[in-house]
Image (cartoon, rainbow, N blue to C red; front, side, top):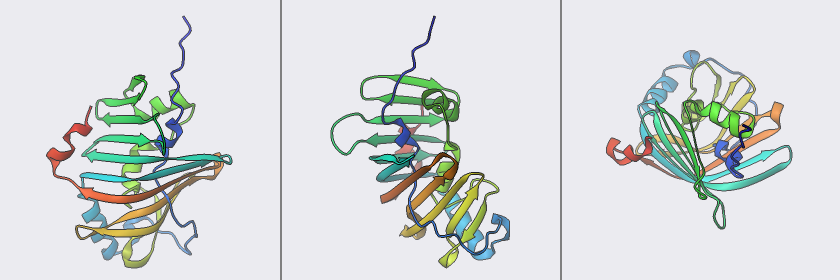
Length: 213
């Protein structure tokens, strides 16, 4: 029996988590070679395991694009991402955790998979490093990316294979500087993902507990 593919019209925008400045720095370093100021900042940000951001996401792929509102709750390794179109319905929710990931739309369509990349590959025909995005959106390398630092030992740019993440602006949140404008590019796919964060909120563990599956 032939399986019908479930369609999520706005799902490509689920992958859009970042905006900023694409100017290449003169030198890139591994995270281990960037000095004590960066290490102190990285440790402080890495300790933030429970947070919420609200903002606006945009995507441009092969000359076509659009935008959505985004609310992202992270509770340890569990997360919930809600995407809203500028006008009208058609919202999407992506809920993930150690047991898998669930994709839902306003029409009641649902798809579950053990792996988020596998789910997006099946629904879209391609995937992005979703698990790394929760690091990148906080201004952290996930593991082993080449990085370049800007003022005050904040990330200015990182590279991971074909993916380049660049940072335009930070804002202090409870004494820790977090990105508010960032950009992800994959030139091989003519893909540009942008995020403007209107609000960061650091949560107590119980506040984000509904993020898990």
